[in-house]
Every structure is written in structure tokens, then in C-alpha cells.
Length: 220
Ligand SMILES: O=P(O)(O)OP(=O)(O)OP(=O)(O)OC[C@H]1O[C@@H](n2cnc3c(O)ncnc32)[C@H](O)[C@@H]1O
Ligand SMILES: [Mg+2]
Image (tube, rainbow, N blue to C red; front, top):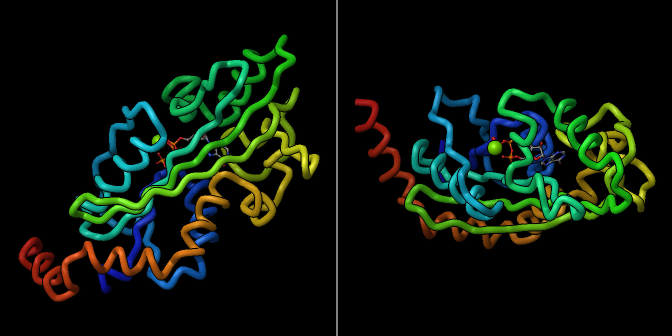
């Protein structure tokens, strides 16, 4: 496995993994999931911005595994809640809450609210073990529905209504969602300049031989 032509998707979220894998299917590298490796410690996502957390996840994973890593930090930004849940989207209803419970909490908090404007935001970070990273970001505007609808996707998809398609994200297929979503658009930017990304990885990674020696001496 050429480390310069391998990219590890640094996420533990299965919904995200499926979307990212599909969006990177034409990217000329071998895509690996975290599941392809032994257990690795979890990153503490204590940054105050999507940028900070995305960088933490990608650089930590790249350093631990010795491969370039791509992370996604994303979340739902609700206007009437001053941007909450934002970077806290994953744990907003408690550390063990389900996606359904998070959606339920959102319905409750916005019960009497007429301003239902919201956006999904996404920052993609591609990092190498030595530390530097490339950053891509995008967003998708919508409104918070009055009740959940749809079975597809993950997270807040059932309550995120996308006016141009008159459906919630959970009522779209993965391909339909990815064409317009925060993640889909951010990863489209990565695809659009894949040659630049590969050159950047080559510039910042040790040569394959050197990396091979390193990992042999690690294992030995
Ligand atoms: O950190 P990783 O391991 O990537 O997985 P995570 O689920 O913890 O991901 P984040 O820290 O980026 O938290 C983002 C949360 O925002 C929500 N979210 C992000 N993108 C979404 C999308 O496309 N559809 C629905 N909800 C989304 C969802 O609840 C995620 O758990
Ligand atoms: Mg997370």
C-alpha cells in the first residue's frame, strides 16, 4: 500500500462515511475507513469552530496511522438559537442520545418559533502526519421542519427541509442529497482540484520507501 496514494476517512460516523466514500469514488487513491485499522484513541473535539475540530481529527489520525487523512466536522446552525447546536451538534442532546432524540429536542426547542432558518455547515480537512493540512468548507441553507419526515440519511436530516427540492434531506436519496449538501459541495471542491491535492500530499509525505522502512521498524 503506497502511503501517498492512501487516504483514511477520519470519522466514526457511518452516515458520513457512506457519503464521503461515494463522493470520493473517482478520487485516484485507495480509500480506507478507521475500521480498517486496529483500535485508535478517540480525538477530543473541544475546538470552538468546525475548522479547529476538523483539523484536530485529520491531523491526529494522520499522525497515529502514518497516512494522509480526511476528516469532516459539520453541524447544524440554527438562526433562532444563535447558531446552536453548531459545533456541539453531535452531543447536543447528551452523549448517548440517538439521532431521533436530537431531532426531538430540536422540535421541542423550536416549538413556538416562527424563524426556522438554519444551515448545515461542513469543514473538510486533509492532513498529513507532519501536521500541515488543506481545508475546504461549504454550507447548505434550509429551514427546520415542523415534524420529522423521511427515512434516509442520518443525524438531523429528517428535520432539515430543503426548499428548492421541497423535501427534507431524509426524503432524498444519498446522491440527491450530496448534489446540494454542505458535505457534497465541500467534497466537490476537493474533486475539482484533485491533482493539486495529490501533489500537495507528495510534497508533505516522506517518500514511499522511507515510509515503508519507518513502518517496518515500528512493527519490528
Ligand atoms: O466526529 P466524527 O467521527 O466525524 O462523527 P460525528 O457524528 O461526531 O460528527 P461531528 O463531530 O462532525 O458532528 C456533526 C453532527 O452534526 C450532524 N450532522 C452533520 N452533517 C449532517 C448531515 O449531513 N445530515 C444530518 N446531520 C448532520 C450530526 O448529528 C453529526 O453527528
Ligand atoms: Mg464528532
